[in-house]
Length: 453
Image (tube, rainbow, N blue to C red; front, side, top):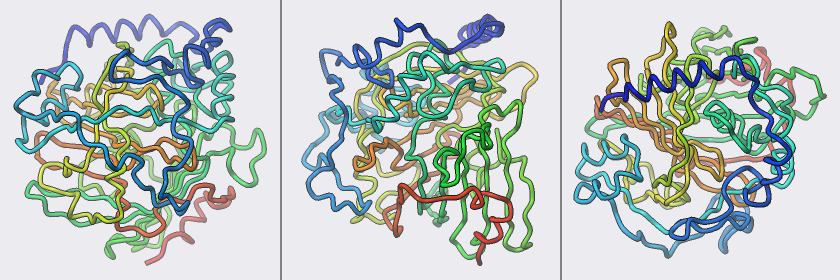
């Protein structure tokens, strides 16, 4: 599937029109919609008169059977698909799918999209939503859209005016303040053979540090540390990232500790289309978390909102009764374990700026209105061919008021391979929210302490 050259040109024109303007803060009148016709983070409260219901606060009460131990049970265990989209009927539903999703269905006879009843479960803590309402009239885009002004926390642009604001909402969305995870990643061959790479990673917002003081490292959005714990040949290697808010003014700071060499080194390649950690060439650095990092290499165009079938409430994929063989199959994950629902998404198109370099010439983002998380992203190569399709199988961490991903999957249409990241079914202590972290935990010297073999 080729790039749409007319829309590509439109995106470049739109970006050039915005280049000299101040973006961001909306009027008090626009902000007054938050909590009225819009949810506190900017989604439409009303339903669509059909499959999409009104938002009534999200899922704030854990379902019966949840023991409070971080092992998340399915709140909808008895629901069955209302219908299934496959090769026999994909044309009927193509207007509510991305081109990449349609391509996956056409490429694999056993790839299907089971569509369930829509539940608007996404919500955030009250203080996060209150801060989001405040941000609407204060936060601005700076550095031609590549940084945030007057920003501290929460969603910066709940009433977005352009594509960059939507993308910043995804990048900055709340994920629990300070969270540690034990997760698995696999990159199956075309015939389905795989091995698991295990990670112990953590993400801590600057303001969530136990020793945080206002003005301390205030260009840092969050700190990220990722240690490989298996297999043995990779165990002990550690990545540390200081994610800066304005990455043009101050590029992302990154270091790696190599257990074999017992050395800490700066890692400028951990950005843009640098190789993803232990990913066998199946993702770029900025594919992690669906998209992360500086947006400066692309022009961003907001194409509006649409209704779309996206992965949602994907609790089957964290079922502790499953093992990884149940999930990982040749060509794609086991779609019988997936759940898709009809939701409204923001459609944002990123096109590579003239003179910039990246392996993806265009990326089409479909961002969930209720959580600001990317649900689906289609990636095009330099020839304009559809190349990779990313799907985020989301869930609501209902005891923490955090929407996040159960697993992320990135399909390569050309090689027939894929990457799946975030698997927890066979991991101990998969999530620890509220982890206490000090600034000294995120220094280069801490890497050596974290690296064991």
